[in-house]
Length: 205
Image (cartoon, rainbow, N blue to C red; front, top):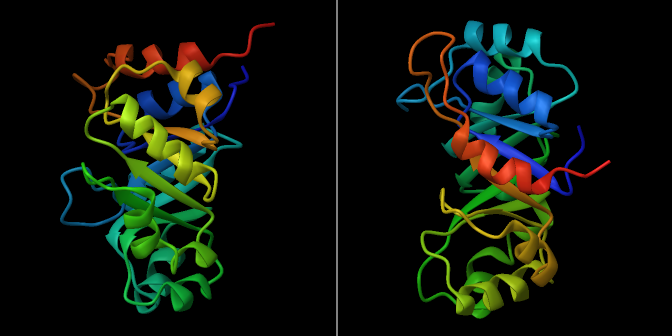
């Protein structure tokens, strides 16, 4: 199955989500690798999940990352991208050789100028900005359009049911970011929230 744009599903914790996403044509799966996180994925769980899904890019998620942390992390997890919100030295982090995704929590009153003041220095070192929005308005759509005209953005609408076709038409976003969830019990999973967006993105035969 093919999708109309790149999709990353963050917070994968179980094989059910991973297999569903793979079947739907999702390009990237994100795994929380911070041991203090409730969604932390242990190395063995990561290995088992990825033995069942092929051809999907694996993204390690950390709230903060530094170059000195990466050697042991990359030795433990086989990753295609590293996603993080913060680093003291993005240039040094980039030199580790793993493509970077910078997660951005969008602030309510931000303009394109606010975004650029904070993230323009980061842009040379990342492949994507993953922008998470808390509320969605027409005004925000205009601003996001301005940002996506200048920077590669994966947009996370925070679980809100949005018109994905309109987003793709009105902005230059590179893709959509979604979130996985825990199983109800082993092997039992509700995919409704993921399906609402992924089914909008299916390429019709």
